[in-house]
Length: 157
Image (cartoon, rainbow, N blue to C red; front, side, top):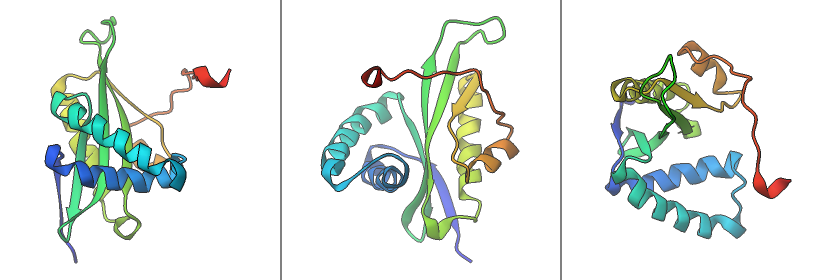
């Protein structure tokens, strides 16, 4: 049985984060050979400032000396609401586990780290968009469907 560990990513982990995000984007995000180099360069530029500034948080799961899973959190702030005075919320993205490591509890452990961080930071709400495969895990952790959101993309209308 293999053991694994989880830790928050820092500047030294950028290449691991890019690699895992590339695997995820190849499946769900429209990444192709034609746009991969530009995407990787843009992602590295973003991570170099966003990680140390706390605009994006990443947790990595390591097994056999390699990063094999990740989770990401983008915090944002809204004006205070009556039931949420801090206004601080977070959007969860980039949940990914390499296929060979799925079904071993890594995603659950990553989510628990992320949720503990959000609770400690005073975030009143976490949001995410779930794949069909990931949805059962999130629901077991207490996430509930919210059909109240609409989306607009400026380049498409």
